[in-house]
Length: 112
Length: 479
Image (tube, rainbow over all chains, first blue to last red; front, side, top):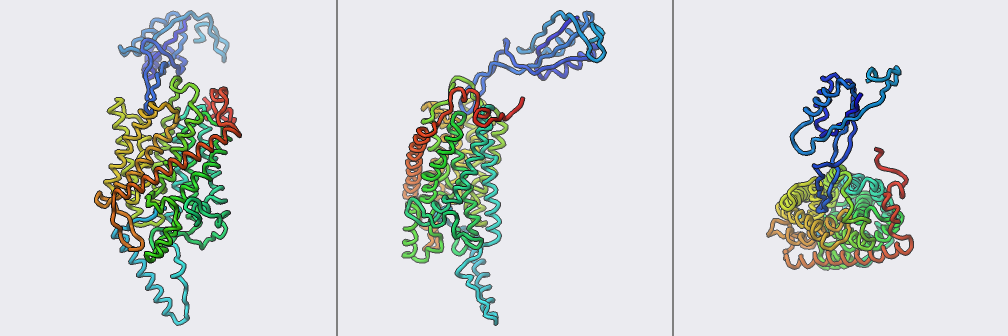
């Protein structure tokens, strides 16, 4: 099992969610986050006072998948979240040791 | 509230009709066989339309403060200080309401010397439902209780304006103590100096007019025009704010840390409520509901729109982007600038005044403030002080009949007096100068006293933590 953590542009979330559903992914977790990368921040101007905003809003998407589904899921995310412009985000993949469905007590891939 | 003014032709006709119907009524009543003679000539009865308008106007000015000004200011501070601003405005208004009834109204609006009124109406002694206050037309009056309430809202908003200058760093107790002092020694004398007069009915002959004029406030006698409070409210509060921001000192991290407004949305809502409420402030200041009220209403609308466009345009040209905060600030700058002029300017003059105010106030909060280095957090001086000065001096120009203004009405001659722009400009400068010096001095003394007794500033720890949780035990937002 793998845990995919993707950082996305907020407005791409709906497209990515739809693509993942079509790929057979049944659940994702989404968090609103802030951060910076190559895109850097921007400046805001209030009555002449200039403030540099270092952190930009992004969406952090987490999805646990079985090893077989990994490539499909990664393709789905990467292709839909791509705008070709700076700040599209990143995808990280980590090994996932265990998963448990709380209601039934199922473990492993069947809990996903 | 303004000393003298010029009724339009329509108004003169309206007054003539009113007089005609009054004399007809008198004739009918005295002609009745029962000998039913009322002394209606001696005690004029308030018109119901005027009365209703004054009620609405008073409510509108209350709306300007609560929640208008509170939200306008609140949106501009950081979220950790939101409630402190809301509370300061809310509680100051309440304190002023009581002080106004206890002694404020009497000191501002009864006869005394040229600077302070007397205490004959302290605790509102002698004011009854049937008591009346003079307006700007002979023989037209309004209920005194409503006049007290209307003027109360002006006394309520003015000190509340000041707190924006030293927002995010002053103790709540220190603010309240200062405000009581400042209200007593700066607001009340300014209101008396500018607005107190015997009323139009006293001006029956040149001698009577001269006698009545001698009892009026200092700046009224100087001929300074201030229709709805450019000097009394805005320059007065603006200079007090400037003094405060300098004496209190800059916020920790000023110029280094981000102090961006936490909600420009709130500021936009607040500015919009100020715009709406200002119709009560300006048009209500005519006290009557007539043609001049209509002129004031339209002038207020046009100057505000013009100043919004000027500020946003200046910003767009010089910084590349037109901002919402700029739009809201421009609107307030226009409202401030038209306040003293609104009863004498023509609509086109109001547009020009608004354009100038929007552009100059933009310059004052961006360039002037940066050059001088003081931390007037919410630009009380930059908008209210500077906008008030532009409005007060500009009144001399836009009031000129040659430039589309109404000129100034002479109650002895019952006609528009000859207008001399230079003389009027000198009168206006008296108003500006006295407001700056008087309020400035009272503020220096007031802040010094409060600093010695209570201490103005919160500790560094409190300032970093935010005033909401430390001073008020609450937080505005639960994320």
